Length: 612
Image (cartoon, rainbow, N blue to C red; front, side):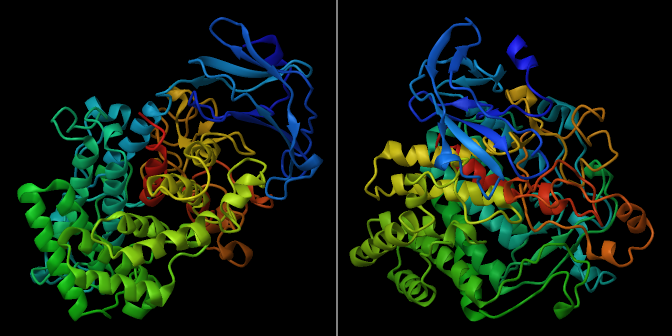
Protein backbone atom coordinates (compact mmCIF):
# COMPACT_ATOMS: atom_id res chain seq x y z
CA UNK A 1 0.00 0.00 0.00
CA UNK A 2 1.27 3.46 -0.84
CA UNK A 3 2.15 6.08 1.76
CA UNK A 4 -0.72 8.23 0.56
CA UNK A 5 -3.21 5.46 1.26
CA UNK A 6 -2.05 5.31 4.88
CA UNK A 7 -3.04 8.97 5.24
CA UNK A 8 -6.71 8.12 4.80
CA UNK A 9 -8.96 8.15 7.81
CA UNK A 10 -10.51 4.82 8.87
CA UNK A 11 -13.30 3.65 6.62
CA UNK A 12 -13.80 3.31 2.91
CA UNK A 13 -11.92 5.64 0.54
CA UNK A 14 -13.32 9.06 -0.22
CA UNK A 15 -12.54 8.49 -3.90
CA UNK A 16 -15.07 6.01 -5.22
CA UNK A 17 -14.63 3.90 -8.36
CA UNK A 18 -15.99 0.74 -9.94
CA UNK A 19 -13.84 -1.79 -8.12
CA UNK A 20 -13.81 -4.19 -11.07
CA UNK A 21 -13.06 -1.49 -13.59
CA UNK A 22 -14.09 0.15 -16.84
CA UNK A 23 -14.32 -0.51 -20.54
CA UNK A 24 -11.69 1.40 -22.56
CA UNK A 25 -14.03 3.45 -24.73
CA UNK A 26 -16.75 4.36 -22.22
CA UNK A 27 -16.91 7.05 -19.55
CA UNK A 28 -14.85 6.72 -16.40
CA UNK A 29 -15.89 9.05 -13.59
CA UNK A 30 -14.74 8.74 -10.00
CA UNK A 31 -17.02 10.16 -7.30
CA UNK A 32 -15.44 12.00 -4.37
CA UNK A 33 -17.62 12.20 -1.26
CA UNK A 34 -17.79 14.65 1.62
CA UNK A 35 -20.28 13.09 4.10
CA UNK A 36 -22.65 15.62 5.66
CA UNK A 37 -25.59 13.51 6.88
CA UNK A 38 -25.66 9.92 8.09
CA UNK A 39 -23.56 7.49 10.09
CA UNK A 40 -20.33 8.73 8.45
CA UNK A 41 -20.97 12.48 8.76
CA UNK A 42 -17.91 12.94 11.01
CA UNK A 43 -15.66 11.87 8.13
CA UNK A 44 -16.03 15.23 6.39
CA UNK A 45 -13.63 15.66 3.51
CA UNK A 46 -12.82 18.40 1.02
CA UNK A 47 -10.91 17.15 -2.03
CA UNK A 48 -7.75 18.75 -3.33
CA UNK A 49 -7.39 20.29 -6.75
CA UNK A 50 -4.75 17.93 -8.19
CA UNK A 51 -5.98 14.46 -9.11
CA UNK A 52 -4.04 11.83 -11.03
CA UNK A 53 -4.58 8.37 -12.45
CA UNK A 54 -1.61 6.10 -11.80
CA UNK A 55 -0.76 2.86 -13.57
CA UNK A 56 -0.14 0.47 -10.67
CA UNK A 57 2.26 -1.75 -12.60
CA UNK A 58 4.57 1.00 -13.84
CA UNK A 59 3.92 3.61 -11.16
CA UNK A 60 3.55 6.19 -13.91
CA UNK A 61 0.99 8.99 -13.91
CA UNK A 62 -1.16 8.59 -17.03
CA UNK A 63 -3.69 11.37 -16.48
CA UNK A 64 -3.89 14.61 -14.48
CA UNK A 65 -6.95 16.73 -13.80
CA UNK A 66 -9.21 18.37 -11.23
CA UNK A 67 -12.57 17.27 -9.79
CA UNK A 68 -15.77 19.16 -10.57
CA UNK A 69 -18.21 19.93 -7.79
CA UNK A 70 -21.67 18.41 -8.24
CA UNK A 71 -24.47 20.99 -8.31
CA UNK A 72 -22.35 23.79 -6.84
CA UNK A 73 -21.90 22.12 -3.48
CA UNK A 74 -25.49 21.02 -2.91
CA UNK A 75 -25.87 18.14 -0.44
CA UNK A 76 -27.38 15.14 -2.18
CA UNK A 77 -30.61 14.23 -0.39
CA UNK A 78 -30.34 10.54 -1.28
CA UNK A 79 -26.89 10.08 0.25
CA UNK A 80 -26.40 13.01 2.57
CA UNK A 81 -23.09 13.67 0.81
CA UNK A 82 -21.53 16.67 -0.86
CA UNK A 83 -19.99 15.29 -4.04
CA UNK A 84 -17.38 15.97 -6.72
CA UNK A 85 -16.79 14.13 -10.01
CA UNK A 86 -13.40 13.37 -11.52
CA UNK A 87 -13.64 12.42 -15.20
CA UNK A 88 -10.71 10.35 -16.44
CA UNK A 89 -12.40 8.95 -19.55
CA UNK A 90 -9.31 9.87 -21.56
CA UNK A 91 -7.51 6.88 -20.05
CA UNK A 92 -8.17 4.01 -22.45
CA UNK A 93 -5.11 1.76 -22.29
CA UNK A 94 -5.57 -1.61 -20.64
CA UNK A 95 -4.00 -1.92 -17.22
CA UNK A 96 -4.38 -1.71 -13.45
CA UNK A 97 -4.94 1.76 -12.03
CA UNK A 98 -5.70 3.89 -9.00
CA UNK A 99 -7.00 7.46 -8.66
CA UNK A 100 -5.05 9.63 -6.25
CA UNK A 101 -5.64 13.05 -4.69
CA UNK A 102 -2.16 14.57 -4.57
CA UNK A 103 -3.16 17.39 -2.22
CA UNK A 104 -4.95 15.29 0.40
CA UNK A 105 -2.88 12.11 0.19
CA UNK A 106 -5.83 9.79 -0.40
CA UNK A 107 -6.56 7.33 -3.17
CA UNK A 108 -9.25 5.03 -4.50
CA UNK A 109 -9.43 1.30 -4.49
CA UNK A 110 -7.62 -0.22 -7.46
CA UNK A 111 -9.42 -1.03 -10.69
CA UNK A 112 -8.75 -2.40 -14.17
CA UNK A 113 -9.36 -1.02 -17.64
CA UNK A 114 -9.78 -3.74 -20.26
CA UNK A 115 -12.22 -4.84 -23.01
CA UNK A 116 -13.06 -8.00 -21.05
CA UNK A 117 -12.99 -6.53 -17.56
CA UNK A 118 -16.51 -7.72 -16.71
CA UNK A 119 -16.31 -11.24 -18.13
CA UNK A 120 -15.04 -12.90 -14.90
CA UNK A 121 -17.70 -11.01 -12.95
CA UNK A 122 -20.42 -12.25 -15.31
CA UNK A 123 -19.27 -15.82 -14.85
CA UNK A 124 -19.18 -15.55 -11.06
CA UNK A 125 -22.60 -13.90 -10.87
CA UNK A 126 -24.14 -16.40 -13.30
CA UNK A 127 -22.78 -19.37 -11.34
CA UNK A 128 -25.02 -18.49 -8.41
CA UNK A 129 -27.90 -19.99 -10.39
CA UNK A 130 -26.06 -23.32 -10.33
CA UNK A 131 -25.62 -23.00 -6.57
CA UNK A 132 -29.36 -22.31 -6.28
CA UNK A 133 -30.28 -25.62 -7.92
CA UNK A 134 -32.49 -27.82 -5.72
CA UNK A 135 -31.94 -31.57 -5.84
CA UNK A 136 -28.54 -31.34 -7.53
CA UNK A 137 -25.21 -32.29 -6.01
CA UNK A 138 -22.61 -29.52 -6.03
CA UNK A 139 -19.22 -31.22 -6.15
CA UNK A 140 -15.99 -29.57 -5.05
CA UNK A 141 -14.81 -29.55 -8.68
CA UNK A 142 -17.44 -26.94 -9.54
CA UNK A 143 -18.49 -25.51 -6.18
CA UNK A 144 -15.20 -25.48 -4.27
CA UNK A 145 -15.77 -25.03 -0.50
CA UNK A 146 -19.50 -24.63 -1.18
CA UNK A 147 -19.83 -28.27 -2.23
CA UNK A 148 -22.96 -30.00 -0.98
CA UNK A 149 -24.94 -33.16 -1.58
CA UNK A 150 -28.19 -32.98 -3.49
CA UNK A 151 -30.89 -31.45 -1.31
CA UNK A 152 -34.58 -32.21 -0.76
CA UNK A 153 -34.52 -35.72 -2.24
CA UNK A 154 -35.34 -37.63 0.95
CA UNK A 155 -38.52 -39.35 2.06
CA UNK A 156 -41.48 -37.03 1.73
CA UNK A 157 -39.45 -34.36 -0.01
CA UNK A 158 -39.46 -33.16 -3.62
CA UNK A 159 -39.79 -36.56 -5.40
CA UNK A 160 -42.73 -37.35 -3.11
CA UNK A 161 -44.20 -33.88 -2.58
CA UNK A 162 -47.84 -33.70 -1.50
CA UNK A 163 -50.61 -31.16 -1.75
CA UNK A 164 -50.23 -28.78 1.18
CA UNK A 165 -53.68 -29.41 2.70
CA UNK A 166 -53.75 -33.16 2.07
CA UNK A 167 -50.39 -34.24 3.39
CA UNK A 168 -51.72 -37.61 4.56
CA UNK A 169 -53.27 -38.37 1.18
CA UNK A 170 -50.78 -40.42 -0.81
CA UNK A 171 -52.79 -39.91 -3.99
CA UNK A 172 -51.56 -36.28 -4.10
CA UNK A 173 -47.91 -37.37 -4.25
CA UNK A 174 -45.95 -35.84 -7.16
CA UNK A 175 -42.34 -35.94 -8.33
CA UNK A 176 -41.48 -32.23 -8.26
CA UNK A 177 -37.71 -32.36 -7.87
CA UNK A 178 -35.43 -29.81 -9.46
CA UNK A 179 -35.79 -26.10 -10.04
CA UNK A 180 -34.00 -23.30 -8.23
CA UNK A 181 -34.22 -22.05 -4.67
CA UNK A 182 -35.93 -18.78 -5.33
CA UNK A 183 -33.97 -16.56 -2.97
CA UNK A 184 -32.40 -16.87 0.48
CA UNK A 185 -35.05 -19.42 1.36
CA UNK A 186 -35.51 -22.68 -0.53
CA UNK A 187 -39.08 -22.23 -1.77
CA UNK A 188 -39.88 -22.57 -5.46
CA UNK A 189 -42.48 -20.48 -7.27
CA UNK A 190 -43.87 -21.44 -10.67
CA UNK A 191 -44.71 -17.97 -11.93
CA UNK A 192 -41.37 -16.55 -10.85
CA UNK A 193 -39.38 -19.46 -12.26
CA UNK A 194 -41.19 -18.91 -15.57
CA UNK A 195 -40.07 -15.28 -15.42
CA UNK A 196 -36.46 -16.38 -14.87
CA UNK A 197 -36.61 -18.67 -17.88
CA UNK A 198 -37.99 -15.87 -20.06
CA UNK A 199 -35.51 -13.26 -18.81
CA UNK A 200 -32.45 -15.50 -19.15
CA UNK A 201 -33.42 -16.58 -22.64
CA UNK A 202 -34.02 -12.93 -23.48
CA UNK A 203 -30.50 -12.11 -22.28
CA UNK A 204 -29.14 -14.93 -24.43
CA UNK A 205 -30.96 -13.81 -27.57
CA UNK A 206 -29.84 -10.20 -27.10
CA UNK A 207 -26.13 -11.05 -26.93
CA UNK A 208 -25.51 -14.75 -27.66
CA UNK A 209 -21.74 -14.46 -28.20
CA UNK A 210 -21.05 -13.60 -24.56
CA UNK A 211 -22.82 -16.73 -23.33
CA UNK A 212 -20.10 -19.28 -23.91
CA UNK A 213 -19.68 -22.89 -22.81
CA UNK A 214 -17.04 -22.30 -20.12
CA UNK A 215 -18.78 -20.81 -17.10
CA UNK A 216 -17.59 -23.57 -14.79
CA UNK A 217 -20.79 -25.56 -14.28
CA UNK A 218 -21.07 -29.35 -14.72
CA UNK A 219 -22.44 -28.95 -18.25
CA UNK A 220 -19.55 -26.74 -19.39
CA UNK A 221 -17.78 -28.09 -22.45
CA UNK A 222 -20.77 -30.02 -23.80
CA UNK A 223 -21.11 -27.83 -26.88
CA UNK A 224 -24.16 -25.93 -25.62
CA UNK A 225 -23.93 -22.42 -24.13
CA UNK A 226 -24.01 -22.78 -20.37
CA UNK A 227 -26.91 -20.37 -20.05
CA UNK A 228 -29.07 -22.77 -22.09
CA UNK A 229 -28.00 -25.67 -19.88
CA UNK A 230 -28.90 -23.68 -16.78
CA UNK A 231 -32.26 -22.55 -18.12
CA UNK A 232 -33.08 -26.14 -18.94
CA UNK A 233 -32.75 -26.97 -15.25
CA UNK A 234 -35.59 -24.52 -14.60
CA UNK A 235 -37.61 -25.78 -17.56
CA UNK A 236 -37.36 -29.39 -16.39
CA UNK A 237 -38.98 -28.37 -13.12
CA UNK A 238 -41.70 -26.36 -14.86
CA UNK A 239 -42.56 -29.44 -16.89
CA UNK A 240 -43.01 -31.45 -13.70
CA UNK A 241 -45.25 -28.71 -12.31
CA UNK A 242 -47.67 -28.94 -15.26
CA UNK A 243 -50.78 -31.09 -15.06
CA UNK A 244 -51.98 -33.17 -17.98
CA UNK A 245 -54.66 -30.60 -18.75
CA UNK A 246 -52.07 -27.82 -19.05
CA UNK A 247 -52.61 -26.17 -15.65
CA UNK A 248 -49.53 -25.26 -13.64
CA UNK A 249 -49.17 -26.01 -9.95
CA UNK A 250 -48.54 -22.72 -8.22
CA UNK A 251 -45.80 -23.04 -5.60
CA UNK A 252 -43.65 -25.37 -3.52
CA UNK A 253 -42.63 -24.96 0.11
CA UNK A 254 -39.33 -26.60 1.03
CA UNK A 255 -37.67 -27.17 4.39
CA UNK A 256 -34.53 -25.23 5.28
CA UNK A 257 -31.13 -26.35 6.54
CA UNK A 258 -27.48 -25.38 6.33
CA UNK A 259 -26.12 -26.64 4.03
CA UNK A 260 -29.25 -27.30 1.94
CA UNK A 261 -28.69 -31.08 2.02
CA UNK A 262 -29.38 -30.96 5.78
CA UNK A 263 -32.98 -29.90 5.12
CA UNK A 264 -35.15 -32.69 6.48
CA UNK A 265 -38.76 -31.51 6.45
CA UNK A 266 -41.40 -32.51 3.88
CA UNK A 267 -42.05 -30.69 0.61
CA UNK A 268 -45.53 -29.33 -0.05
CA UNK A 269 -47.11 -27.82 -3.12
CA UNK A 270 -50.05 -25.57 -3.89
CA UNK A 271 -52.81 -26.23 -6.44
CA UNK A 272 -52.94 -24.74 -9.96
CA UNK A 273 -53.78 -21.10 -10.52
CA UNK A 274 -54.29 -18.89 -13.53
CA UNK A 275 -51.36 -16.53 -13.02
CA UNK A 276 -48.75 -19.29 -12.81
CA UNK A 277 -50.25 -21.02 -15.84
CA UNK A 278 -50.31 -18.03 -18.17
CA UNK A 279 -46.81 -16.97 -17.13
CA UNK A 280 -45.52 -20.47 -17.83
CA UNK A 281 -47.13 -20.45 -21.28
CA UNK A 282 -44.81 -17.59 -22.21
CA UNK A 283 -41.76 -19.34 -20.78
CA UNK A 284 -42.46 -22.54 -22.70
CA UNK A 285 -43.09 -20.49 -25.85
CA UNK A 286 -39.76 -18.68 -25.83
CA UNK A 287 -38.03 -21.96 -24.96
CA UNK A 288 -39.63 -23.62 -27.98
CA UNK A 289 -38.07 -21.00 -30.26
CA UNK A 290 -34.64 -21.04 -28.64
CA UNK A 291 -34.09 -24.78 -28.23
CA UNK A 292 -35.85 -26.11 -31.32
CA UNK A 293 -35.71 -29.80 -32.24
CA UNK A 294 -37.58 -32.33 -30.12
CA UNK A 295 -37.23 -30.20 -27.00
CA UNK A 296 -38.70 -27.26 -28.87
CA UNK A 297 -41.68 -29.29 -30.07
CA UNK A 298 -42.38 -30.45 -26.51
CA UNK A 299 -42.12 -26.95 -25.09
CA UNK A 300 -44.42 -25.64 -27.81
CA UNK A 301 -47.05 -28.25 -26.95
CA UNK A 302 -46.79 -27.33 -23.28
CA UNK A 303 -47.12 -23.64 -24.09
CA UNK A 304 -50.29 -24.31 -26.11
CA UNK A 305 -51.81 -26.43 -23.34
CA UNK A 306 -51.00 -23.85 -20.69
CA UNK A 307 -52.48 -21.01 -22.73
CA UNK A 308 -55.62 -23.00 -23.53
CA UNK A 309 -56.13 -23.93 -19.88
CA UNK A 310 -55.70 -20.30 -18.88
CA UNK A 311 -58.24 -19.08 -21.41
CA UNK A 312 -60.74 -21.61 -20.08
CA UNK A 313 -59.88 -20.80 -16.45
CA UNK A 314 -58.81 -17.13 -16.29
CA UNK A 315 -59.77 -16.45 -12.67
CA UNK A 316 -58.44 -19.35 -10.61
CA UNK A 317 -56.71 -17.86 -7.56
CA UNK A 318 -54.45 -19.40 -4.95
CA UNK A 319 -52.86 -17.31 -2.23
CA UNK A 320 -49.97 -19.10 -0.57
CA UNK A 321 -49.10 -18.38 3.06
CA UNK A 322 -52.41 -16.58 3.35
CA UNK A 323 -55.65 -17.09 5.27
CA UNK A 324 -57.63 -16.38 2.08
CA UNK A 325 -56.61 -19.84 0.87
CA UNK A 326 -56.10 -21.38 4.32
CA UNK A 327 -52.46 -21.82 3.37
CA UNK A 328 -50.58 -20.19 6.24
CA UNK A 329 -46.95 -21.37 6.30
CA UNK A 330 -46.84 -22.48 2.66
CA UNK A 331 -43.74 -20.76 1.22
CA UNK A 332 -43.04 -17.10 1.98
CA UNK A 333 -43.42 -14.56 -0.86
CA UNK A 334 -46.92 -14.11 -2.25
CA UNK A 335 -46.98 -15.35 -5.83
CA UNK A 336 -50.64 -14.61 -6.54
CA UNK A 337 -51.51 -11.37 -8.32
CA UNK A 338 -54.55 -9.15 -8.71
CA UNK A 339 -56.20 -8.06 -11.96
CA UNK A 340 -53.74 -5.34 -13.00
CA UNK A 341 -50.67 -7.55 -12.68
CA UNK A 342 -52.44 -10.52 -14.21
CA UNK A 343 -53.12 -8.39 -17.28
CA UNK A 344 -49.41 -7.62 -17.52
CA UNK A 345 -48.61 -11.32 -17.36
CA UNK A 346 -51.11 -12.01 -20.12
CA UNK A 347 -49.48 -9.35 -22.27
CA UNK A 348 -45.97 -10.71 -21.74
CA UNK A 349 -46.97 -14.30 -22.46
CA UNK A 350 -49.06 -13.38 -25.49
CA UNK A 351 -45.97 -11.71 -26.98
CA UNK A 352 -44.04 -14.97 -26.66
CA UNK A 353 -46.96 -17.03 -27.95
CA UNK A 354 -47.19 -14.78 -31.02
CA UNK A 355 -43.45 -15.12 -31.63
CA UNK A 356 -43.75 -18.90 -31.40
CA UNK A 357 -46.95 -19.43 -33.38
CA UNK A 358 -47.15 -16.35 -35.61
CA UNK A 359 -50.90 -16.43 -35.05
CA UNK A 360 -52.69 -13.12 -35.60
CA UNK A 361 -55.03 -14.06 -32.73
CA UNK A 362 -52.29 -13.09 -30.32
CA UNK A 363 -51.91 -9.68 -31.99
CA UNK A 364 -55.50 -9.03 -31.00
CA UNK A 365 -54.85 -10.13 -27.40
CA UNK A 366 -51.72 -8.01 -27.15
CA UNK A 367 -53.38 -4.88 -28.53
CA UNK A 368 -56.48 -5.27 -26.34
CA UNK A 369 -54.43 -5.65 -23.17
CA UNK A 370 -52.12 -2.82 -24.23
CA UNK A 371 -55.13 -0.51 -24.58
CA UNK A 372 -56.50 -1.70 -21.24
CA UNK A 373 -53.45 -1.19 -19.04
CA UNK A 374 -51.32 1.38 -20.93
CA UNK A 375 -48.10 -0.52 -20.08
CA UNK A 376 -45.58 2.13 -21.15
CA UNK A 377 -45.36 4.26 -18.02
CA UNK A 378 -42.43 6.08 -16.45
CA UNK A 379 -42.46 3.63 -13.53
CA UNK A 380 -42.87 0.45 -15.60
CA UNK A 381 -39.21 -0.65 -15.16
CA UNK A 382 -39.58 -0.29 -11.38
CA UNK A 383 -42.41 -2.79 -10.91
CA UNK A 384 -42.74 -6.55 -10.50
CA UNK A 385 -43.25 -6.89 -14.26
CA UNK A 386 -40.38 -4.48 -14.84
CA UNK A 387 -39.20 -6.24 -18.01
CA UNK A 388 -42.58 -5.78 -19.72
CA UNK A 389 -41.54 -2.73 -21.70
CA UNK A 390 -38.56 -4.63 -23.08
CA UNK A 391 -40.80 -7.53 -24.12
CA UNK A 392 -42.94 -5.04 -26.01
CA UNK A 393 -39.88 -3.64 -27.78
CA UNK A 394 -39.05 -7.21 -28.82
CA UNK A 395 -42.58 -7.54 -30.20
CA UNK A 396 -42.22 -4.26 -32.09
CA UNK A 397 -39.08 -5.58 -33.82
CA UNK A 398 -40.76 -8.69 -35.21
CA UNK A 399 -41.48 -8.62 -38.92
CA UNK A 400 -45.04 -9.95 -38.53
CA UNK A 401 -46.14 -7.40 -35.92
CA UNK A 402 -48.70 -4.98 -37.41
CA UNK A 403 -46.61 -1.96 -38.48
CA UNK A 404 -48.85 0.71 -36.98
CA UNK A 405 -48.89 -1.04 -33.61
CA UNK A 406 -45.11 -1.59 -33.71
CA UNK A 407 -44.63 2.12 -34.36
CA UNK A 408 -46.98 2.96 -31.49
CA UNK A 409 -44.97 0.80 -29.08
CA UNK A 410 -41.74 2.53 -30.07
CA UNK A 411 -43.27 6.01 -29.79
CA UNK A 412 -44.70 5.20 -26.37
CA UNK A 413 -41.38 3.80 -25.13
CA UNK A 414 -39.49 6.87 -26.26
CA UNK A 415 -41.98 9.35 -24.84
CA UNK A 416 -43.08 7.60 -21.64
CA UNK A 417 -39.97 5.69 -20.52
CA UNK A 418 -36.78 6.67 -22.33
CA UNK A 419 -37.48 10.40 -22.28
CA UNK A 420 -39.78 10.48 -19.24
CA UNK A 421 -38.95 12.70 -16.29
CA UNK A 422 -36.97 9.85 -14.66
CA UNK A 423 -35.23 8.75 -17.84
CA UNK A 424 -32.78 10.49 -20.13
CA UNK A 425 -33.51 14.00 -18.74
CA UNK A 426 -32.11 12.88 -15.37
CA UNK A 427 -28.99 11.53 -17.06
CA UNK A 428 -28.52 14.63 -19.18
CA UNK A 429 -28.84 16.97 -16.19
CA UNK A 430 -26.51 14.81 -14.05
CA UNK A 431 -29.33 14.64 -11.52
CA UNK A 432 -27.94 11.79 -9.42
CA UNK A 433 -24.77 12.45 -7.45
CA UNK A 434 -23.70 8.82 -7.90
CA UNK A 435 -24.74 8.77 -11.58
CA UNK A 436 -27.55 6.18 -11.55
CA UNK A 437 -30.89 7.88 -10.99
CA UNK A 438 -33.87 5.93 -9.63
CA UNK A 439 -37.13 7.15 -8.08
CA UNK A 440 -36.49 5.63 -4.66
CA UNK A 441 -34.69 3.03 -2.57
CA UNK A 442 -37.07 0.32 -1.48
CA UNK A 443 -36.85 -3.43 -0.94
CA UNK A 444 -34.81 -4.83 -3.85
CA UNK A 445 -33.43 -1.46 -4.98
CA UNK A 446 -30.45 -3.12 -6.65
CA UNK A 447 -32.84 -4.88 -9.00
CA UNK A 448 -34.43 -1.54 -9.83
CA UNK A 449 -30.98 -0.18 -10.63
CA UNK A 450 -30.39 -3.00 -13.11
CA UNK A 451 -33.75 -2.60 -14.82
CA UNK A 452 -33.26 1.17 -15.02
CA UNK A 453 -29.90 0.60 -16.70
CA UNK A 454 -31.68 -1.58 -19.23
CA UNK A 455 -33.87 1.37 -20.26
CA UNK A 456 -30.85 2.51 -22.29
CA UNK A 457 -29.47 -0.84 -23.50
CA UNK A 458 -32.94 -1.77 -24.74
CA UNK A 459 -33.23 1.55 -26.55
CA UNK A 460 -30.03 0.61 -28.38
CA UNK A 461 -31.42 -2.82 -29.29
CA UNK A 462 -34.57 -1.20 -30.67
CA UNK A 463 -32.67 1.63 -32.39
CA UNK A 464 -34.65 4.27 -30.52
CA UNK A 465 -33.94 7.73 -29.17
CA UNK A 466 -32.10 10.79 -30.38
CA UNK A 467 -28.85 10.13 -28.54
CA UNK A 468 -25.91 8.09 -29.78
CA UNK A 469 -25.33 4.47 -28.88
CA UNK A 470 -22.32 5.58 -26.84
CA UNK A 471 -24.45 8.06 -24.88
CA UNK A 472 -26.90 5.34 -23.96
CA UNK A 473 -24.15 2.87 -23.08
CA UNK A 474 -22.60 5.45 -20.79
CA UNK A 475 -25.97 6.02 -19.15
CA UNK A 476 -26.50 2.29 -18.62
CA UNK A 477 -22.96 1.78 -17.34
CA UNK A 478 -23.63 4.24 -14.51
CA UNK A 479 -26.09 1.73 -13.03
CA UNK A 480 -23.56 -1.05 -13.39
CA UNK A 481 -20.89 1.06 -11.69
CA UNK A 482 -23.30 1.72 -8.81
CA UNK A 483 -23.63 -2.01 -8.13
CA UNK A 484 -19.86 -2.38 -8.51
CA UNK A 485 -19.08 0.16 -5.81
CA UNK A 486 -19.91 3.67 -7.06
CA UNK A 487 -22.31 4.34 -4.20
CA UNK A 488 -22.01 6.16 -0.86
CA UNK A 489 -20.80 3.03 0.92
CA UNK A 490 -18.18 2.25 -1.74
CA UNK A 491 -19.66 -1.24 -1.54
CA UNK A 492 -19.74 -3.86 -4.30
CA UNK A 493 -23.22 -5.30 -3.81
CA UNK A 494 -22.10 -8.79 -4.85
CA UNK A 495 -21.01 -11.27 -2.21
CA UNK A 496 -17.42 -12.30 -1.50
CA UNK A 497 -15.82 -10.86 -4.63
CA UNK A 498 -12.33 -10.27 -3.24
CA UNK A 499 -10.99 -12.89 -5.60
CA UNK A 500 -12.33 -10.89 -8.54
CA UNK A 501 -10.78 -7.54 -7.69
CA UNK A 502 -13.29 -6.04 -5.25
CA UNK A 503 -11.75 -4.67 -2.05
CA UNK A 504 -15.07 -3.98 -0.36
CA UNK A 505 -17.79 -6.43 -1.36
CA UNK A 506 -20.67 -7.98 0.60
CA UNK A 507 -19.33 -10.05 3.48
CA UNK A 508 -22.58 -11.62 4.71
CA UNK A 509 -26.20 -11.71 3.57
CA UNK A 510 -29.47 -13.39 4.40
CA UNK A 511 -29.55 -16.94 3.04
CA UNK A 512 -30.62 -20.16 4.72
CA UNK A 513 -27.35 -21.79 3.62
CA UNK A 514 -25.00 -19.00 4.71
CA UNK A 515 -26.92 -18.21 7.87
CA UNK A 516 -25.69 -16.49 10.99
CA UNK A 517 -23.36 -18.71 13.04
CA UNK A 518 -22.45 -21.22 10.31
CA UNK A 519 -19.03 -21.67 8.71
CA UNK A 520 -20.45 -19.87 5.66
CA UNK A 521 -21.59 -16.88 7.70
CA UNK A 522 -19.17 -14.02 7.06
CA UNK A 523 -16.10 -13.38 4.93
CA UNK A 524 -12.98 -13.07 7.09
CA UNK A 525 -14.74 -14.21 10.25
CA UNK A 526 -16.27 -17.63 9.68
CA UNK A 527 -14.26 -20.52 8.27
CA UNK A 528 -15.46 -20.17 4.68
CA UNK A 529 -17.92 -17.31 4.17
CA UNK A 530 -20.73 -17.13 1.62
CA UNK A 531 -20.24 -18.06 -2.02
CA UNK A 532 -19.19 -15.37 -4.50
CA UNK A 533 -21.42 -13.45 -6.86
CA UNK A 534 -24.81 -13.18 -5.15
CA UNK A 535 -26.49 -9.79 -5.62
CA UNK A 536 -28.15 -8.57 -2.43
CA UNK A 537 -31.35 -6.52 -2.28
CA UNK A 538 -29.55 -3.27 -1.47
CA UNK A 539 -30.42 -0.05 0.36
CA UNK A 540 -33.97 0.04 1.70
CA UNK A 541 -34.98 3.15 3.59
CA UNK A 542 -38.20 1.48 4.76
CA UNK A 543 -36.30 -1.26 6.61
CA UNK A 544 -37.32 -1.93 10.19
CA UNK A 545 -37.15 -4.72 12.69
CA UNK A 546 -40.28 -6.77 13.29
CA UNK A 547 -43.11 -4.81 14.91
CA UNK A 548 -43.00 -7.15 17.88
CA UNK A 549 -39.75 -5.46 18.94
CA UNK A 550 -41.93 -2.42 19.76
CA UNK A 551 -44.38 -4.52 21.76
CA UNK A 552 -43.61 -8.06 22.85
CA UNK A 553 -41.44 -10.64 21.05
CA UNK A 554 -41.39 -14.02 22.68
CA UNK A 555 -38.41 -16.26 23.42
CA UNK A 556 -35.51 -15.80 21.02
CA UNK A 557 -37.17 -12.71 19.60
CA UNK A 558 -37.16 -10.96 22.96
CA UNK A 559 -33.42 -11.60 23.28
CA UNK A 560 -32.68 -10.26 19.79
CA UNK A 561 -34.83 -7.16 20.28
CA UNK A 562 -32.67 -6.12 23.22
CA UNK A 563 -29.82 -5.55 20.79
CA UNK A 564 -29.90 -1.91 19.61
CA UNK A 565 -31.19 -1.35 16.09
CA UNK A 566 -28.44 -1.45 13.49
CA UNK A 567 -27.27 1.95 12.26
CA UNK A 568 -26.99 1.70 9.30
CA UNK A 569 -29.39 0.66 7.80
CA UNK A 570 -31.75 2.33 10.28
CA UNK A 571 -32.14 6.10 10.39
CA UNK A 572 -30.07 6.89 7.31
CA UNK A 573 -30.45 8.73 4.02
CA UNK A 574 -31.85 6.35 1.39
CA UNK A 575 -28.61 5.20 -0.24
CA UNK A 576 -26.95 4.65 3.13
CA UNK A 577 -29.81 2.46 4.36
CA UNK A 578 -27.71 -0.67 3.98
CA UNK A 579 -25.37 -2.86 6.04
CA UNK A 580 -24.03 -6.39 5.72
CA UNK A 581 -25.97 -8.50 8.23
CA UNK A 582 -27.84 -11.78 8.12
CA UNK A 583 -29.90 -12.22 11.28
CA UNK A 584 -33.40 -13.56 10.64
CA UNK A 585 -36.56 -12.84 12.61
CA UNK A 586 -37.15 -10.44 14.33
CA UNK A 587 -34.18 -8.48 12.94
CA UNK A 588 -35.48 -9.18 9.41
CA UNK A 589 -32.23 -8.63 7.54
CA UNK A 590 -33.93 -10.11 4.46
CA UNK A 591 -35.44 -6.69 3.78
CA UNK A 592 -31.94 -5.42 3.00
CA UNK A 593 -29.48 -8.22 2.27
CA UNK A 594 -31.41 -11.22 0.95
CA UNK A 595 -30.57 -12.37 -2.55
CA UNK A 596 -33.24 -13.20 -5.12
CA UNK A 597 -33.03 -14.83 -8.52
CA UNK A 598 -35.08 -11.91 -9.83
CA UNK A 599 -32.39 -9.44 -8.70
CA UNK A 600 -29.64 -11.68 -10.00
CA UNK A 601 -31.05 -12.13 -13.49
CA UNK A 602 -31.88 -8.45 -13.95
CA UNK A 603 -28.25 -7.69 -13.11
CA UNK A 604 -26.97 -10.46 -15.41
CA UNK A 605 -29.06 -9.18 -18.29
CA UNK A 606 -27.59 -5.69 -17.88
CA UNK A 607 -24.04 -6.86 -17.25
CA UNK A 608 -24.07 -9.13 -20.31
CA UNK A 609 -24.34 -6.06 -22.56
CA UNK A 610 -20.89 -4.95 -21.36
CA UNK A 611 -19.06 -8.29 -21.22
CA UNK A 612 -17.30 -10.05 -24.08
